[in-house]
Image (cartoon, rainbow, N blue to C red; front, side, top):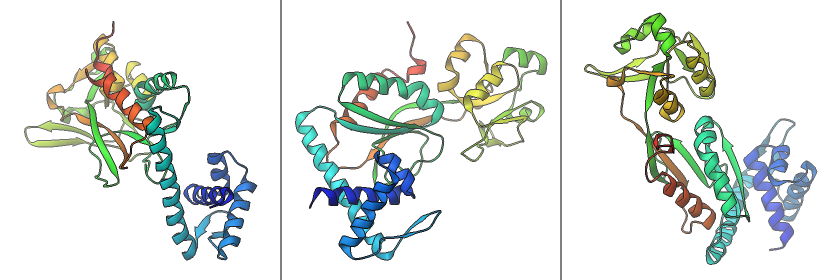
Amino acid sequence: MELNSINDIAAFVAAVKAGSYTRAAGNLGLTRSAIGKSIVRLEERLGVRLLNRTTRSLGLTDEGRVMYERCRQILEDLEEVDSTMAMRRHVPTGRLKLTASLSFGQRHILPLVGEYLKLWPELQADVSFSDRFVDIIEEGYDIAIRIGDGKEDSRLLSRTIGWQQAMTCASPDYLQRRGTPQHPRDLVDHDTLFLSGFLRRRDWKFKTSEGIYSFDCPGRLNIDSSEAMRASALAGFGIIHLPTYLLFDDLQSGRLVPLLETFNIEPEPIRLLYPSKRHLSPRIRGFIDLLVAQWQQGVPWEQTKE
């Protein structure tokens, strides 16, 4: 197959995945015009129309849908060939694509990415820290770090690398003014701060003698940033319920006081997810090995700082 054909296929697949020529061009480092010309060449070579174009969206024709699935497989096969050759060199190269939730990623994954890039100068990384749900396969990510059990996906391999606990807490100032709740039901009489945004608001869950108790009363303050929630709690605005990866230092120092600890539910797993492939490229395997080695003594926010 001619090189131009491969380039045209890559442009077509990128356009379908991105849903627009402009986003595809940004992802490939090309111009919008170059993407359009590649797809036109591909359609002329095949003698069929692949896309129905409107000013707002792209839609696959029946022929385009068949072509997309085959082309995506071609590109995945080529990537596997590249990975296999890279494995023979045993040197991480290429571009690592990684995703994690916003606050967790910024605090605990970004430092590892920086360390990894220092180890391997030929490596590049595309990192997405976002609280939206990311389809790892469809969006082409090599690795995702997620918290919670999640849904099983036969296309992905999963490895638990740690555990995190959700904690209810407030500042000493707030508790002095408003008192300390002794049971989850007491929270209705307090100012509570809830996380809102990309995800549906999650109820606060507690384990009681009567079963799981879900606290879902309206929050006095609703914020779309867990970091802003933490800052609000430190300022005495009210009670929060957040993961210990955000709060551990504040709890250790006494800036925040843990509440209702006897009602805590079980910790949630922190999992590595990556596509199930016969050959795992050095760039993926190397990062997994680095993360596991760094966390083998426990999650970093609970490790003793010298």
